[in-house]
Length: 290
Ligand SMILES: NC(=O)c1ccc[n+]([C@@H]2O[C@H](COP(=O)([O-])OP(=O)(O)OC[C@H]3O[C@@H](n4cnc5c(N)ncnc54)[C@H](OP(=O)(O)O)[C@@H]3O)[C@@H](O)[C@H]2O)c1
Image (cartoon, rainbow, N blue to C red):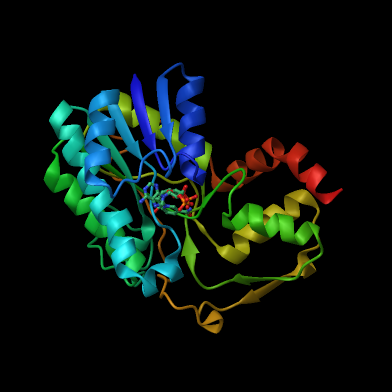
């Protein structure tokens, strides 16, 4: 497959470029300097000149609190961007895959959110992401929306690697114990994106690691337990106690109604994914703590 990946320098973008490169696909990874997804003429020209079979949009403005203060910027990156990419894909007949978020739900539900649940975003970030889903789907029928959540992986500023780095420096850390999501390892997500690209079945998919999900506190405690880091460094706090600008859902655990039906392999349990992540990054973390 000829694949164009936007937001290629981000956490998910890097995993996608790496995964599709490993499977022998012809991958063009474009970071924000190479392609600003909110630049209409650049999007059209880039997609037309590269003429990929599939465009995977991993670009987004993911600063959830920052989005509260700059709605226009959030909408440009997270809503207009997917729309422009979908329109460009339509022009050349390419499949379009765009990543969305568990935060499109309000968290009031008990249990898992599926495609049957109505989104009700609480924050500017979440609203801009939902708008991106809808604009993309309206613009081009051959669109796949992949919602995921609590994504972790090597490098970048994601929750887990940041916490482990700080704990290795002996810092105390506050972890939220009363909001719950489904942790997802970026390389596992990327492998499923590959399968979805092959299947080419438009729709909304919820792609997360298996298990009952976890609070940030449980997620961090599990990783600390596996690495032998001192659990006393973790201080459990409530979501409300942090008084952050953007509201977050208390429960954003996802489950997919479609994955099994279309023959997608079940994802590994999230705690096995954490173990895999720790093994994969063991060399890097050793050198950081030295
Ligand atoms: N991380 C999570 O836990 C999580 C959970 C659910 C869903 N998601 C979704 O997963 C996708 C990937 O997120 P991520 O975790 O990989 O975030 P990330 O590490 O912040 O990566 C996003 C990338 O997009 C780039 N970007 C921002 N605005 C852009 C624009 N206008 N044009 C082109 N590139 C732009 C960013 O560049 P700069 O850094 O230079 O701005 C960054 O490299 C997003 O759709 C996000 O909403 C993430």
